[in-house]
Image 1 (cartoon, rainbow, N blue to C red):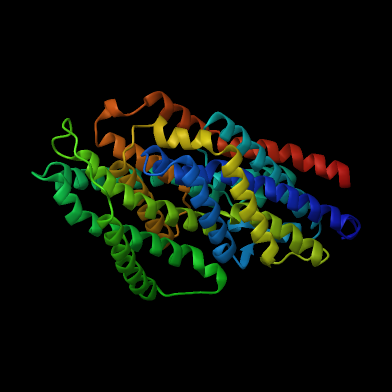
Image 2 (tube, helix red, strand yellow):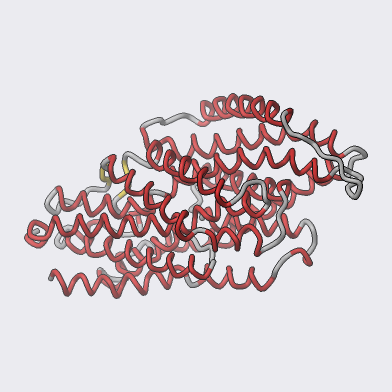
Length: 421
């Protein structure tokens, strides 16, 4: 208690700095994933992706980023073990933010799309197991998270495979692909609006006190889907089609139709991602602020001040602008060649998987889901379409995320313990 009273302001300043650093890592790595399919398919440029992300990631983080964030993230630590030494929670959360931020910086520099959720969870598991004791960790929860490594890419890959096959059958194999695209793409636009609305309503907006039932979310999502479909039809009619002697079937014009669709998926994914993943950075920050302001009292939930969400949103935006290009290149072009139609299938598959996961309570990674979806779309074109060397590197980076975050957090935990006592 005395340590918290003595160093309280220093703890909050450090938490803000490390929280911003962690949010920067989320922007450099996770947001780049969400934009990767849109940029890789050439539906939008990197500059446009950054503008979309700056607006929609920030709006998502600020408007739906969370009024209440759990201090002991996901029930990983037993709070009863911290009542006698609340400063250990402060040291641990500072260590987790710094460790996860550094690992994300390393991964982003190498172009590895890793999971920010697993980075922060790994860091919290690390300091809890060593600093508080192995029994302090809920290992069943950690096992659940580890199982999602295999499950989420598999589900997203399967949906991506089926979606791309449906696009290929309905549009590209028809006698008039452009006419078929004009006929079926509005249906796909509705699907995008509906799915992403469900992601946001079921997983994002509950944080701002908007608790909708599943049936209410369903009806509202159908309405949003219809409105977005109407907007898509208007934009589709404004497309200027070109004739090319070498393109007998007009595939280039078909991809222009799908390019309109990808603009919607890029905006919506950015908003949904900002509303969900900002918690990776502000959750531990909220824990530190709560313990310091309550002079050592540990509550199961902590109110997140509005400026903390803005800090997280700003960090995410700065991360994407300064360092996001390499991960965008890996997801967008490194795994398989993407066109707007393929990018659409991958993005919608990823969004669908998140909806299923949030409905069943499965802990899931946006990164693993998106990479799995891109793999599924590539596989639909045959094994030769996949870059197996890049895929191998990505899988290895996933496997070392938890131990890397945990190892760094243990070092920093004992460093803070030595500094402050």
